[in-house]
Each structure stands twice: as structure tokens, then as C-alpha cells.
Amino acid sequence: MKNYLVVGGSSGIGLAISQHLLTEGHQVWVVSRTAPTIDSPNLHYLAGDVTADELSLPGLPDQLHGVAYCPGSIRLKPFRSLKPNLFREDYEINVIGAVKVLQACWRNLKKADSSSIVLFSTVAVAQGMPFHASIAAAKGAVEGLTKSLAAELAPKIRVNAIAPSLTDTPLAASLLSSPERREASAKRHPLKRIGTAEEIADLALFLLSDKSGWISGQVIGADGGMSVLRV
Image 1 (cartoon, rainbow, N blue to C red):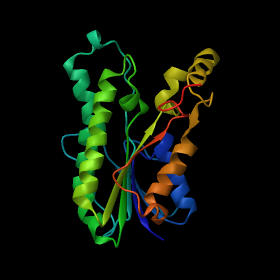
Image 2 (image 1 turned 30 degrees about the horizontal axis):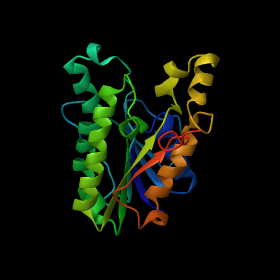
Image 3 (image 1 turned 90 degrees about the vertical axis):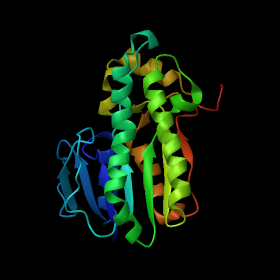
């Protein structure tokens, strides 16, 4: 049994990660604004908002074996309509929120024999897509943070990021709100479908586990082939 912290674990990919970790018999601490709909004695809920001025994480175990930081945003607008405050909002939740969490629990991570951090980027950083300027800029910073921390915290703490394409989660609900939108989104991917939260969670679990013990500093695409394939 190990101890894991899942930030944003009440919905979407974070919820799927939490459920899988609990199924494997681990202890899971979830930080989110709303409580996850999971009934388990191994689940510990900490109410918190990563965009708040101060973030405290009381009640964490002395040792943490892994952290998954899952909060994110999808803001698709033409560049000319993106005011600086919108860039700041995306940067706050995707980058500064991760910084706050990791600074709050890095001693817990260091006390474990080995531990792993998983952050989330987007395919739009490497691919380049219209109307993604704000979120791609923020997630580009996440990728830089991933590699810098992987170097600084090695060899005891591994740090990796997952870069998904559009995934069927509550965050993406407005982009998949009709059969026509869902079909159009699926067709943009070489694998011709939308990814699921469970598929991304499976990859996150691998990166959190000892099975990925020789992997650090990587940004791993989980994007239906979008970033590298032309079919």
C-alpha cells in the first residue's frame, strides 16, 4: 500500500486516477473544490482551491509516493480577443497551482524511498493549433517545469507530463456537446475517436508506479496520433 495525492480528483481524469489507485489498494488524498463521489475508507478528501492566494494541505501522510496534478482549462479564443488577464488565469491554474501544491508537499515526497510526479500538458504545445494561444502558452510552461524539476529532484523523485488531445471529460463537455461536434473532433485524430479519461488515467498510473522507474523528464503524448501522424 502506498500514499498518493491527486489534485483535481473529483472529476474527469483526476477522478479516474483516484478510482484506479483505490482499486489497487492504495491510500489516496484528493484535493479539489468539491468532494469526489467515491465511497472508500482509503479516500481522504481535502477541500482546496489551487487558485486561492494561500493553499494549505493539512493531514497529508508523512510519506507521499506520488502526486498527480490534474486541474486544467480549455480556453479557445482568437488571439485578438485574449486579454492579458485571461492568459494570467490559465497560467494561474495550470502552472502556479502546480507550483503551490508541489512546494506544499515536496518534503513528503522526499521522505518516501522513491516517488513520482505527474503533470498535464496538451498536444497543442507541440502541434500548434489556432485559437489555443493562452492554454498552449500555459501548458508550454508546464512542460518546462516538468523537465526542470525532473533534473532538480533526481534521482529520488521522478517528474513526467502527459500531453493529451481532446478527451471525453466534463472539462471538454462544451466541445463535445452534440453528435456532430463529437464526430468532427474524432475525425481530426488519426485513430478517428476521442480519448477517454480512463485511458489517460491508465498512463498516469503507469508513470506513478515503480513500473516506470527509469522514466523521468518526459512529455508523453496520448493524443490519438495527432501530434506525429498524417493519415
